[in-house]
Image (spheres, one colour):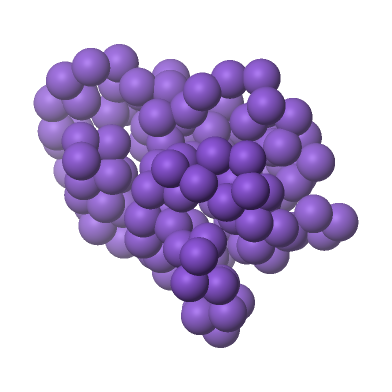
Length: 137
């Protein structure tokens, strides 16, 4: 990520119901930041550092929200979207792609589209808004 990270203003009230989230990002700093944001929002959050691990997590638990990077070694975020499409397509609307590579987001097949795409480096308040919309729709 380039430049300083945005600072969250006073946190908004927590989400109305405790939500369970999965963060999939091979960058430890980004995963930690996303986890902190979700915890401050009142969500439980697990971090998966690679696509294989994420698929295992998805098979073992039902997540209200998935924050997914696209560019990862071995099993990419796009592969994970295709896996979700095949195993539980209704869960695609629980996915927010968080990526620095907009071109990869544009290459996601129509049938595997997530709830939305947020580009890195992201504005924290914009991401929080997208998370709230995703988990409350």
